[in-house]
Amino acid sequence: MVRGIIIVLGLLLVGCNTTHKLTGTDYVDLEIESAPAESDEFPEEIVRDAGWDDTRSDLKQKDKYEELRLWLISDLYPSHIFKITKNRKNVEGAAILYWPRDTVRTDHETVYLQPRMMQILEGVCTSFHETGGYGYCIPEFKEKLDWENVYQRFESVDFWQIPGSKNEPGNSMEENEKSKNWQVFTQMRLGNYYREYDHKNPHTYANDTLSNRILQLSREAERISEWFKEPRPTSTFQGVTNGVKFVRCDSLETWQLQNKLAELLTSSGLQAFVDVEGASNLYYLMLKGWVRQNWYHEWVKLDYDRNLYANEMYDIRTVKDFKCPDVLSEK
Image 1 (spheres, one colour):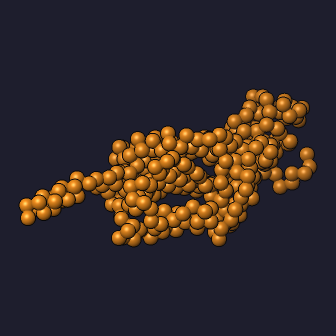
Image 2 (image 1 turned 45 degrees about the vertical axis):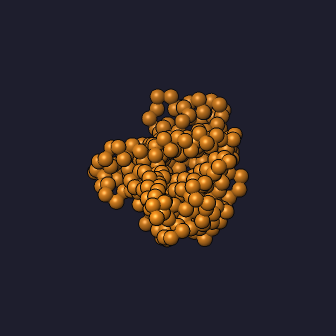
Image 3 (image 1 turned 90 degrees about the vertical axis):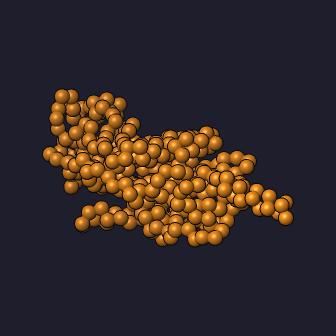
């Protein structure tokens, strides 16, 4: 009888002392509970089409599997999904870049984004895919990443325990930020324990500590993106510039031209056509180059969506405003 009592007390003590990385959070145990419903903001059709497993319901071996999925989205495409998995043997990672196939950009214009993204991401991805409502591609890396180190950096922010956003109202945004929202959605698995949370415009939070932790998640994701292969400078872009600001002819995005016009004219053999030294004119340009997206937590505070790096200019002419000429075939 005494031995039985001791065994029962021992089991109770073990149960009371059992903790894990998600203890104290709003996680669910997938063996006995259902995960939250999928959100249309974070389209699971993409990850399923790409061959990723169902992080919300597929059962794992308890305490021998960890996973982090990080979604970053904004009105600036492509959006990003990062996945890092850890088991007893190793740590592995992967990424997806995605965008809506069609998105209304103005009251009068519907833009089909697939060809535009293929142009911008040429060289970063080698194959492009489409699902019902989205286009996506798998970025390639310059070299093999140390995913264990990457995962440790995310864990240093303690993503397991970061609170959700339900009770975190933001401050008033500055004028240039009102239409520039970005969002981070975090999913995690610890064996069969599942948790998720999302944060929108975390840079506006009155809670500086929480804001900084979310911003750090974005910074660590940016570190991964810096290892993507560089775009190939073979795409041709047309737009109007004042020497810094570059507005594309076929897009409402505003880019920052990283080249000096005079040097670009000289290297392209066009210096005889326009004198840009000391001028404050606007110029229509046709050039070849590549672009780099400004990362989410920086983009929201900047005047430019992407940085444009040109390596050759084909055409230049003076224009009166930030509007491309109606006829581009005649000088």
